[in-house]
Amino acid sequence: MSSLKVILAIGVIAAASWLPAKASDADDIARALSAAPSGIASGAAVVRVGKDGSMTTLRPGTNGYTCLVMGPVPAMCADQNSLEFLQA
Image (cartoon, rainbow, N blue to C red; front, side, top):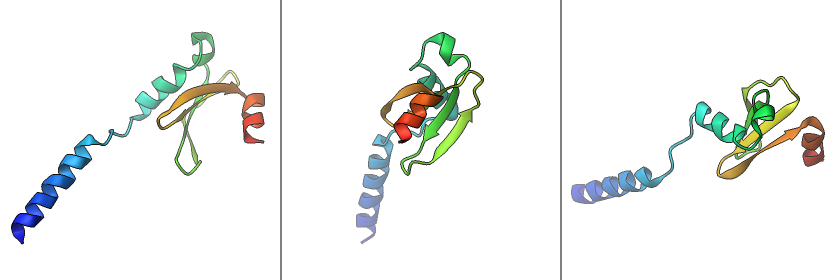
């Protein structure tokens, strides 16, 4: 029975090592800002959208643009009007 536990433990560890690591805030900020030209990215807010739709601000903005990072989905940036349209 103990050898079965060892085999299962090895399988779980091997499977977990193939899962992608959670991106750091800095990684998510860089990926989000890569979706905008530098003139917009320099002052854009950065928001991470969770699987449940929750939003976490990673960086406040100063120019009215927000860049969103949403897991494996490509990042996007939008102004306030565009964000309101997307939420409608």
